Amino acid sequence: MFSHLPEPKLDPILSLSVAYRNDPRSEKVDLGIGVYKNSLGETPIMQAIGLAEHKVLDTQKTKSYVGLAGCEEFNQSMVSLVLGDSPVLDRVSAIQTPGASGALRMLGDLMKIAQPNTTVWLSNPSYVNHQPVMEAAGLKVKHYSYFCPVTKQVDTARMLEEISHAGKDDVVLLHGCCHNPTGADIDLETWQQLTQLAQDKGFTPFVDVAYQGFGDGIDEDAAGLRYMAERVEEMMITTSCSKNFGLYRERTGAAIVLGRSAKDALNARGKLLTMARATYTMPPDHGAALVKTILQDAELKNLWLQELTGMQKRLVSLREALCHEFRTVHNSANFDFIQSHKGMFTVLGFSQQQMSRLREEFGIYGVGDGRINIAGLTEGDISYVADAIYKVS
Ligand code: LMR
Image (tube, rainbow, N blue to C red; front, side):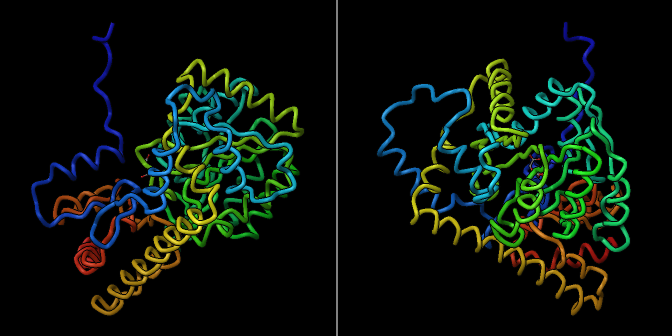
């Protein structure tokens, strides 16, 4: 049965962590997978999560099943976090999923059932798992231009022009904030223009907001998608607690559907639940129990927000420090764009070969598409990393 299977291809992000661990050099920096590290190079459990864990341990009386949709209070809390107190909440439904990749797949499968001829439009480039997940769901995938390699910013005019050709059978996947991999975000005006296009052309927007809170803040990072949600008939959203709650391994995310009516949203949810039953039955509870505990407790929520703001501000200062190093030590303004990017990632505009040189000559592990994870840097790495990037550029 298995002998004809080809050798597996390595995952372009996950395989880097293994290669990094196995690298015997002492001078090495892991800027691959999107994980936040503090100034000691550690990814600690957030204090709010630690406190919620104690609370859950003290109060949880059973490990019995929760339900196909996971924890309903978690789902409601996530809808509020993403959509705020939007007037469209009465036609929104949500399910808890195993991480945001689980949410992407569930919504991909839902699209395949609801509208089999769907083509999903992805930004070029996009998160490396977007295309495999959508194709695994049996959907066609197309790309729209997004990033200008010269300015290292979004090529908004080209993006809007290409998306203006999307039609009723199309779904346009947008990054809510902190674009992965480029770090270049669209502004509110572009969200407004995209909303108008969705209304005029009839395509369905699909927003992945896995990094909410890492750009400008929880509400600020959701402003564009909230604007859009209030004006379009249908929309899908995936969200994750991996990054903003630091719950990576707990696989905690949600899939959110905005329907034309409350009935539509509930029917979509019903279909998602049937599909969940046929896939994994129900999502793991622990991460969702922690997030729910935090979001329903004013003190814990405040602490969590403070910690998240701390991480977000540190990313800004790491970006500033890197640019400062290029300017003062290497007399180069060529990397100023790093400061204008948002969230964990920045695309350097390097080729595969340049990324290999960074890895082989300097032990600096970034993703082959030129992405580096700013959140993987410590203050002590700045000079070494800037020097290596400068030499390879
Ligand atoms: C990343 O882009 O590094 C993260 O989202 C991790 C992943 O699952 O790919």
